[in-house]
Length: 569
Image 1: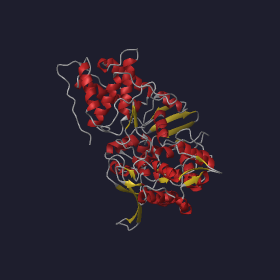
Image 2: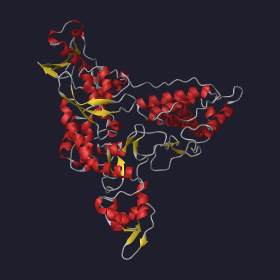
Image 3: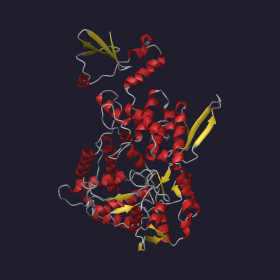
Image 4: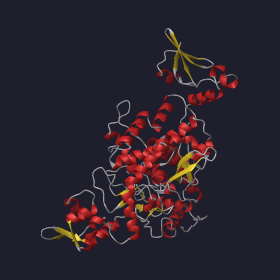
């Protein structure tokens, strides 16, 4: 654990001296992110200290400017000094005091603050930060980010302001509060709510297309992605929870009261809730069983390779048909290709040798490399931390369900025989249409009803199932447990049930709506603003005790709040 060193500002010193002292302590005495951290680097690799589940890429903290943070075409520009040193010190200090995996929000807040401070060519010295600077930083966040993200990041600006004042790091004490408003989900009628709801949950066309791909898929990537989608349609899961399932995740039991068979998956929620068995509803049991079976069959060879390396950590894995090569000192390019790739050629083997900086001998008639060099290079390609696949739970790669031979899911590259990797969130997201890559929907010609491409995000399944649970009347405690949450207050973010759906559920629960009396009978339909009601293309309307009634030439149509359908007399 990192040593905790509390910074104490000098009571009689000025802000400049306090700032120098704060940076010096964070640079030379703190051990957050490791005692060997190069404080002066503008990019910190903190992969060994921040573990993001189901992400295989390195975790890097980039202290770049607001203007270049999203510019991937050009090299990012570091923050200006002395703000840069303060930003590094603040991030390291805060991680020592309040460690978090979501450290990006701290850096984003700092970037906006530096941009506001230097906007007019002024100094980047943090001691000059004022309430005007914070207001401008908040405006920058509002202009670039979504309303919810801007509000959350501005809340951290407020934390920075409090930190600066508490430690006397500014010339003038700061009394600033975040003026951005949190996104409200209270309003559940109108076009804005409907658009937001549609963006959060999968479309009917997307769900229908997933079922089609699940039945027809034959390519490994299509089989695996559609199987993941099938699992996520059965319970409100986070994608990283799915990708960290173990091979023996299935549980078969019986319901004590009825003696009926029950089927579930062993689950470890990502955000702190207790490990559970997620029982699958009977209508989805066969689908999930089939999905797990498909994934297990697709990934079995990779687990075999993983078990080999766990037993033989210093030796190259070779299939039985190529074991004779282990006795050779040198390998030809053809033999290297056979050792490395499921399907490849001599040129691919040569390119790999060059990329690994192996010495290639020009023999007669073939090029060759030393077997020992190939073996060492392959061992270097094993995943970070092997044989442990996920540090928080000590799960081995040989025990993981979502482990494949490297490049198995790659669209063009041949899969490796002897190198393994975990399936990552990015590999699933890309094939669901989240980005510019070819998706499983493109492969099978599936489109939205308006002819546009289908784009899905993995979290939409979670929103969808939570909304179904809310509409079905499941208790908030049960929804939180089912979703793997620590608090029922987190349910609200995933609740996209409209007011008309709620009213329909209540009236259906009570009984015949025509015989309803008391307070329920007097519930009025949700009122729409005049401009939004006009968008419904209703010529005229008036509100009655039970509904909104439109006057259409000779026909009177009632739009009931409970069903949101037109009933024409």
